[in-house]
Image 1: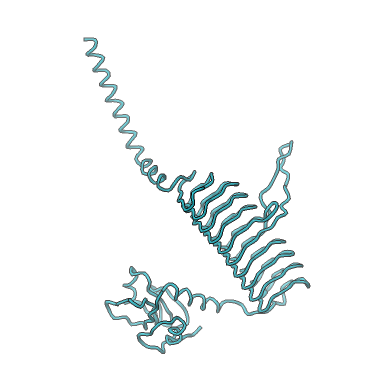
Image 2: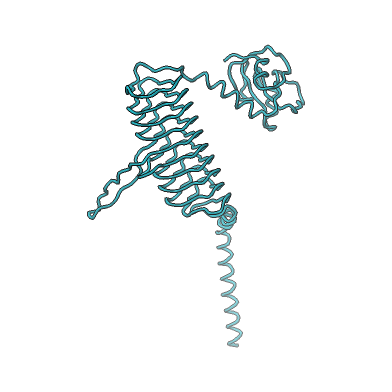
Length: 352
């Protein structure tokens, strides 16, 4: 995408300072800017780079006052982060495939495709599937029988959606995401062997859900595993059978949620956090990275830390003490020796 400063200012409702005819074709970080790119300054700690950057255009806030000359053309906007997000969306659209069905895709004759869908090479779509308008299915995607997919969905290469699952509108599933694999359900028999419990439920993703690469969402034993509207999952996350995750909850990489646990809405969960099964986590909970949640969190907005997880403040106090345990141990031993010595002196005085 080749675009001029004037055109950008019109898109962003901004004002131009400098050459209005200069053009850019890609974004860049301010410290790595090169001619023909656009960068931005939103955080004051990066201001020094504004005077050094080779980027042709620099987005800045309307109230930014430079202390040195800047070579780049400036575009002043109300909200720099919002502006750069808008532009990144525009640039990313360049890499999306055109609408149409690749001749090497295997699509059952009764599949329903909405307008402007794109189906990539070597993708397989089974019978009974419906796909909404403006959805992009990249190469080597598998979509099982009777899956329902909404409009404006992006399925990146290698995504696998098992039979009967439902994907809402405006969802993004990154490479190698698996939706609807069997839940981990086994029953030991009298001989100690494990008998598989059939997993006959499905997975439902509501609207505006984004799932990172290599994340797995298991189907329910019965009923549905549900990710509510606006849920954001990072890479390499395991969500077990019959889990429910509430609206606008975000979970960082390598977290694991065991079966039938209910996560509330607007929760923030750090990387490598783990949750035992059959518990409830209240709305707005904040779980720090590597914490192990072994019991329900019933108080909304509570922050927890540690394994097993404790209230955040309690954990920090306990950790502060933990770091001092060697010194505390030395003090205790010294006190024990002093007490023993005093006892000896007292006993000697009593004998005398």
